[in-house]
Length: 125
Picture 1 (cartoon, rainbow, N blue to C red):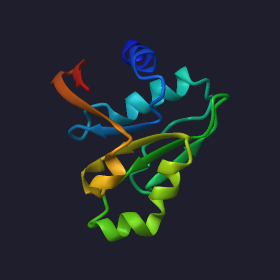
Picture 2: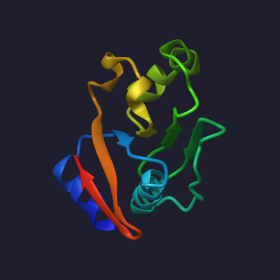
Picture 3: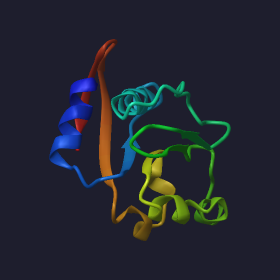
Picture 4: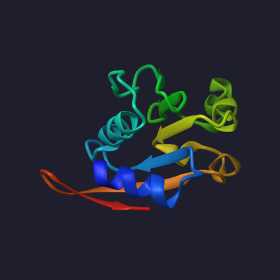
């Protein structure tokens, strides 16, 4: 996962918004942990399933980790003010992004994480 993060930052240096897709347990939060560490954050990264949004600090800017799994519709997304997070220029990692309105997905990079075995993942960008 660390190598994937390094490659992403080299290939897409301008990207700050990442949409993470994958089954439960596929490694979406693990990906964010590796990315936060790469950015120099010493914060403990945990799944924001219940809080919906977690914020972490790094020397390279704020990191927002969002989990939209429990949201039911786009009005709930709008009530959270996600547009402000996405437009702020900070690092945003959004798990379960399918509920987002199409216009919110325009600036992001979608990362699909698939389970290939107990310790193996396939990552498609």
